Image (tube, rainbow, N blue to C red):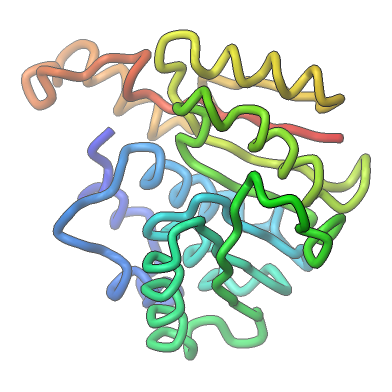
Length: 223
């Protein structure tokens, strides 16, 4: 969903200076924009929490959480070292926007055998469109379970389109790993309105729009 332009209507720019350095001419994927909006609209769920973003790419949602200043710590992680370096530069350039929230970048490979330094550490994991590659499903389920701190008070929040059977297959793997989950289709009135517009009256503005490929579902995963 192309939300970057209208997303600014709902963002307090004084709180989200981090946006200026993160945005790139390459553009964001739809789920990234939507997760950023969702995190800003529900900033209270991150209050006094330790948060990690998995497979961050731009790390837009992670920076939004950090700029909202509710979380105690935000770690923006990716498996690509160049992405991590880029994220670190953005952290340094926008450090004044985070106040007391500790913000870090981290190289994290989901299939890495020894992740003991981050085991049982985080209250909330966030990620976008991370279930697309079926070959990584087991590694993703394992790292989510590994990172969450404790049952009952920690969770993963993912936004991901169905992309055929890819999401369903991941959820099967998550269940096999003892994880519990819920899937929500209509979780934000503005996002839902935009989605319905692309299917109906605004169809001409995005001719290739496909619900299964583009519309991100909200998945919440717990231990």
